Image (cartoon, rainbow, N blue to C red; front, side, top):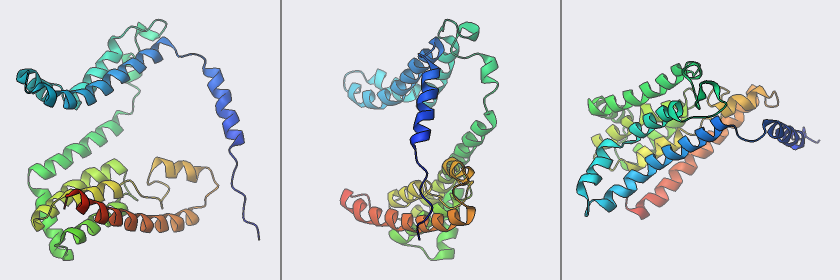
Length: 253
């Protein structure tokens, strides 16, 4: 018995081409935004590369790049440039105005920033280490690869109910604290969390892509859950197997 045919992409491609044609050439505001993005990427990538190269010849400049031109500073500068670079024909004469900025969903940004700050605080105050010791005591995980398996599985499970960023932010300090309490290298558990947090295939609200697929009506919730948990299980074994194979070769264990 033939199953339901997969949806084609011809209609979607035609619709995308039609909408692209209606956009026309980039506006001055769009070109200014592209330049700001290029500047931001340069400020994020160049200082960490240039600082070690300049240290023998110009140690003051190298120190200034490391201490004063961090990724956070680069992001703030890029945001300010959007308000400062002229863009003819744009409202207010710039790429963005405060009226546009006020419509940004600042709640989501504050939520993500708060999660990152919480992760840093957990690590610096020692709570992450205490949580790691408690988790190790409760599960009996006391070797490198049992800790890695535990952290990877936990990240995949939590990512079903939280965003990837929030999952990684919350669990990375715990993984590092758990590794420190067991006196093992934290690279494998941390990578297990980072990769596991990118899973979460079962529930419609796990990720934005899951929500988009579910909203199409082509994938029933029950089918998504069954297939998603199957993919989660495969992802766990693939992540753990790759880490177990590669990290010893790289000397990170």
